[in-house]
Amino acid sequence: MRDRLDALREEMARRELDGFLVPRADAHQGEYVSPQDERLAWLTGFGGSAGMAVVLSDRAALFVDGRYTLQAADQVDGDRYAIEHLVDTPPSEWLARHAPNGGRIGFDPWLHTEDGAARIEAGCKRAGAEAVPVDTNPLDAVWADQPDPPSAAVRVHPVEYAGRDSANKRAELAAELAEKTVDATVLTLPDSIAWLLNIRGGDIPRTPVALCFAILRADGSVTLFVDPAKVDEALRSHLGANVDVRTPDEFAPALAGLADKRVLADPAWTARWVFDRLRDAGAEIIRESDPCQLPKACKSEGELAGTRAAHRRDGLALTRFLAWLAREAPSGGLTEMAAADRLEAFRREDGLFRDLSFDTISGAGPNGAIVHYRVTEATNRPLEPGSLYLVDSGAQYPDGTTDVTRTIAIGPSTLDMRRHFTLVLKGHIALARIRFPVGTSGSQLDVLARQYLWQAGLDYDHGTGHGVGSYLSVHEGPQRISKLPSAVALKPGMIVSNEPGYYRTGAYGIRIENLVAVIEAEAPEGAERPLLGFETLTLAPIDRYLVDRAMMTAEEIAWLDAYHRRVRETYAADLDGDDRAWLERATLPI
Image (cartoon, helix red, strand yellow):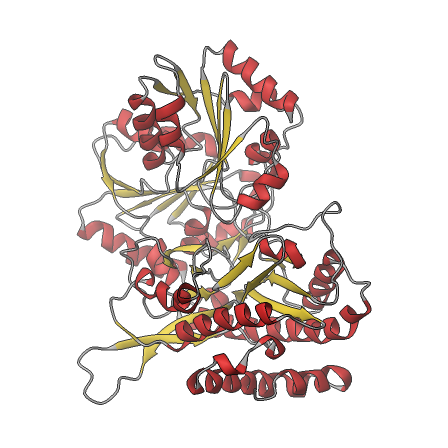
């Protein structure tokens, strides 16, 4: 990557820039980006889904969070880039120490949110430098073979899967805008627009969305800015007269047309470029959360029914894979890639399968300790007897999105493996069983999953749970279960993951992940507050051979046995022969 970094610095010098920021982001600020927008990977070699590089004339740094520290060290030239922790040393703090006094630090205002750009500006100011928005991206100028923009067709998402009519959603949000005396809201997150208009696309790998922008007005009308080549008559008919389809080039004039209007825009998710256009127009900006995020997170009854059906089918594919793995792995000839391919093949047998929901994490032995590991030809390890194998995978179906992790012992396991697995399992069960008062946030529950690891002096450097969409992004907000503070209360209909883990660098990784839905819970006699709980959606055996029964309480054993009984009863009729015999053994009471 030396020539690419040098080429960027030459272009920076030509533009009289002393530094430039390269985030892993696009103009829509979602988690996933198209190949055209993989600038960070092109420049540094880092292939994770979150991070940022800061390139100065005399030094450069790559910032990643705890999920990616091992991956970054493996993929990135440490002689050219200092690897920094995104949380412990954010780019703004690094710039405050290293940006040259009087220097000009460039950033692309399309690729940084309003809040993110403000942090960069503050860091530069502390160093006596200036953060300079650029009209065109200097990295694009030196990326000779940058891919073309994606051009997948936009599709109708039927109401049988969406659960609610788009007109109903638009009317509900428009009424909320009118109540706040807000004239319009600018929507830039593709999954928000997909949810609002009941549309799906194929512009982003593993996430069925179309890259587009929208303006929703208080009268319920919408202007959708999307490449017209992606739109056919069936889609126009679905959108109806209240949705005006325009080209992306008309987005800037439309923002200018909001002069003197009260306009809602989310500073945490909307690009600085949009805020600048609204400021230039003289609009009164209402800085609030994207109004689609919370109702999108609270799934309709139709969406919940769909996701239960999707998880049942998906769990059957995973269960068949686990039975196959139990037969094939002991021979020692199976690799990470072969296992991932076989799991995908089982899923593809489902006629409703549309895609994976993310690239499968298939980690054997020490590769399992890399939280977001991606197997390549160079790293492809065999599944060796005496090791652990971690597989984190999921799929996209029109009725639901899945995400599940299982850790499997390949042959005999050590005392440490079983102890660590059981500590993780105890935390998983504690979170799965909890009942909590209405108004509780995920950050208030996070400790439940960590408590047993903490008592042993252990922890994991990632969140315990993320939101999951309905045939949308496998990671969605605003809900989460994490150490990070959150003011968003968990509400009925929300889907979150339950995925505590433990990672011993150079040895093995352990993670147990099910998706759960927030539901109303039965309150005990004398309860003074309404309670919520979790319904476990994911159905697949947990490796009982890694459980140290002596470490488990009676309540924990009862939960695990009941879960396995549910798995067995769900799938027994769908399996026969060796697969059914394996399921019977894998779900025996412990």
